[in-house]
Image 1 (cartoon, rainbow, N blue to C red):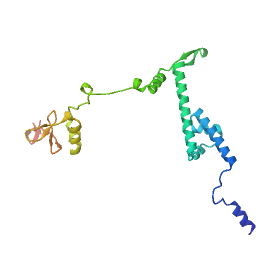
Image 2 (tube, one colour; image 1 turned 90 degrees about the vertical axis):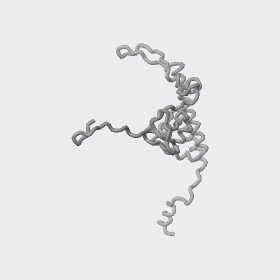
Image 3 (cartoon, rainbow, N blue to C red; image 1 turned 30 degrees about the vertical axis):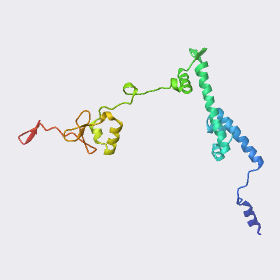
Length: 214
């Protein structure tokens, strides 16, 4: 075989990817542990990768490994718990802020965060401290709609109108003498499931000199 052909054949990549060696596996595991620890402290992928000295893209390559995904989720939990500890410290123990006079620090005072304290209480006991806005009808029952704008009813299909009347008996139309129906305020007809608009009032314009004057 010619020497050039032999050299070219050696330069070709292997047909099947080679399995990482035991040393490469140990190096990858050590890098993963260092990266996840850095993320637990820093909370961002870019900063953790820079601290370890690797590319942030490597983290996404590792996400194909279910074992690594499980460790990654634990690292995220660790960072959230760190934030919670810091929020608890600022809300309960307080934090120092310098006191300055004429540009020079003359002392320090302890500050507390009422907002963080309320967030912690809402998270730990939402049934007691969570903001609530509940609207009910008479006696704590459901809200009954007593009046509906006619132009809104006119845009509903027959099926939508039927559902509205079934869910809100308070807007059930009353019968009209001609067999039609009207809502509680009486101006609109509902015939065969369709809302008919109220007829326009007769014009009060009077002809004068070929023109209409109001």
